[in-house]
Length: 419
Image 1: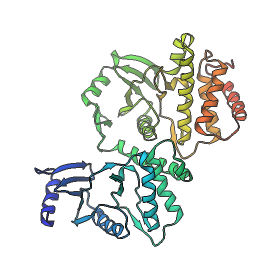
Image 2: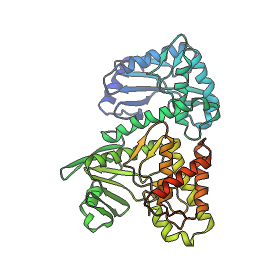
Image 3: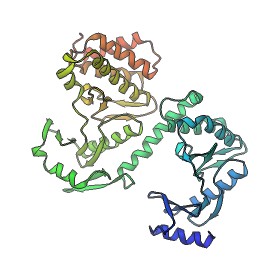
Image 4: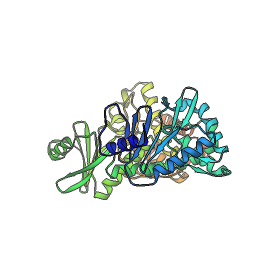
């Protein structure tokens, strides 16, 4: 395709037209990517210098021997490159990826947005994509190399590979930054969320949630099952949804944001569906842990009892290992049933950081221990703590932590009485 033909294609894509013979590969509020005659044309919808920056980075990377798509042409707001047939990189490709990244760093190139989504595996080669934020130095400092490897490590998921154990701090820092950037999307128009208004109140909903169903649910709460009620709020079960009325719009908004933050950190929750004023609508994840223990623990089999303590310990360990603190982590705010993972039900009071302090770990462990009914024997509680210590890799001696947890548990006015 000639530069004039590429420009005409870009203009049609900008208007939302997809000509015959052209395949739309990707689109979002920021850009559209189309394939035509073996050429990938990336169109930037927001005025910026991204096209020029990406073209410049592609030229420099190719000159340094870094494998990137070949630049064909560039316009005011579009970049055309050769299309490389391949697949998105996955975790098992790490042995191939690391030598490519090492070579890139040795040449003084910092990609600045290195994650699995920007790595393409084509045969035996690994190709770097989307280098518009790349920067180039005569020599790349070690701190920047580790910062970038931490971003790559975060995209690999759990557990942290041994080859990248030296960048664990940078991975956790990336987790914090990613949570902030991703949760901003649930409070504005984006590919997954859209504004939701009804009866003078406003908020946001997931695009896959029907607004008609949400409105119908809110208008028929008088016929729904009332689970909990206080002067400042209430919780209802309506069909496959749980509807919670918070004390204020701010509290409901905080819960909406925290729910998506937990998703970004791969913590299982009752999935938030919509936020409207003081209302939060989420998926029904079943009965809470206290209700299950009181109803079924006496007749539960030994494997079911073991599964219960394992899943509760794993959920708490995952929270702390990923820098997340829940200031009201009682068993009635968690749900579980045999064969299912433990999930968080109430996440208004969640705080995200890089590390969870010892004081907060003890508080969460005591909250969970004190809120579990007396039917749960001391032996299982001991094994829950041991499982937590093993799973989260906490270094303090278990006996010291145990004493502090028991002391705080007995000071709390919940369901456990020191059995």
